[in-house]
Length: 198
Image (cartoon, rainbow, N blue to C red; front, side):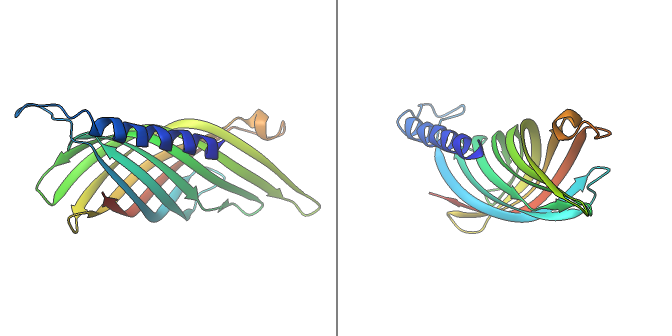
């Protein structure tokens, strides 16, 4: 599911960039449409907040961004979360996001921004018991939000420091009829990212 969504989202982003480049509006005042396209990647640490999973892991990210002007952009990203363990159980998730970015330039070299949107995720869960091992796959879609700062390193290269909050929800009926409660895992993700703008 994640691969098909990734392809569709990437197609939409590229199409937006292509159409936008042909449709720049006129006017000295107001918000002029000035599309630009960026790609990037990052690495960071996740903090899992759940009764069963309460530990820090790492996560890797790749993203593509279309800025409609200096204030508004659309970003799609693929995030590979490391395996979370709690002794007998493992939870290995990955996700694709699509979000809106609102950016406020402070100086020519520095800006702050907020983002929010939807994440579609897949996860493999494994329960390792003494006598047997059981595994299952889950998926879902949840909203997410984040904030960040951007520093211009060169004309085309930026450093972005981000904090994002994700959530994974799995019904107890999907896991096991003997499961005592639903899985509702909040994930805080702090990352450093390099962004290249064409």
